[in-house]
Image (cartoon, rainbow, N blue to C red):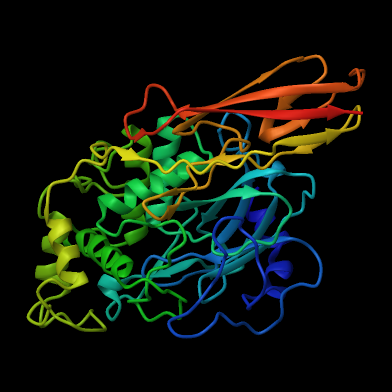
Length: 436
């Protein structure tokens, strides 16, 4: 089915290219930038159709991969029915994808799935930093899957839905914790960023340490990818995508990168515990940054790292034993709620309610109207459920047969129960709904 979809949309994909344009992702202005320049392509943005755009990278561009936009169901699960996909495209040689959203009525989060493929002799591949000279491109097969999330879709063109093995782990960790949603994904990307010593992963793209033409803009992120690919090389994994598939399954297994799945997929090699001391730090410092490492395409080497530099601090962080479940974050509650809503009988109002907008400067976009689980709990109570109700994805509704009048919705926002990563205040808001 996926192969047929890939063939069906190949002409569409080839007609699209990654270009500068105006995009809206609500809290953070979306952008796709190269190191010092804007992202450009051979053809302009399509003149019609709303689309999602971003970059797929493993520290080198991931090219010719199948990209599918998947809806998120109201319970936070991913709709994996290919027939329900919102859009399909492929990644270009620079790792950029651009997919038109076919369903103009969809509202909510979108999971961006990136899957390896080989269609008409064109093999999906990714540039690997640890083997950039000896084996620059590794094959991304159909069993290798990456994920990322557009936190909220409301018919706006959107860029910077960056996809890497770390965003994949964030989606998988979210599924382990209960499902995918804006707040869950935002929290998990922060969690993964802290685990790997870079703080934030959701919109950043690592530099291209494999020299494959990717538009990366984050140097420390690239060193993390170099360290991971070096670990895979050190333990004997010949295709780095097998290792990244292992990381994905490890996060889905129990939420942790602890090697609990047993073996790297498609190999008989033990999946390492990436939370253990020294495994990542040593692979980066002793091996990838070694003076004589011909695979490393840029400096400094391990003899030239400035004390206290960002790279020095990253090596220190990756050398320590870490527990991804240990942090407790206090969120900055920035909640936007409409004070009054006017509705005709039979109509709906698409609310835009979100809390936990930022956490230490990191945009989390925890939308109370996006469906699914979150680290923030939203509870709506209607003064008259027969006349005013809240449907999935924050649709405030005056059902057919409602009696005109003025009603209220009481919204309580608080840290979600039975989770340990978030603390913060509980606040209550009132929304006045005028039904006409």
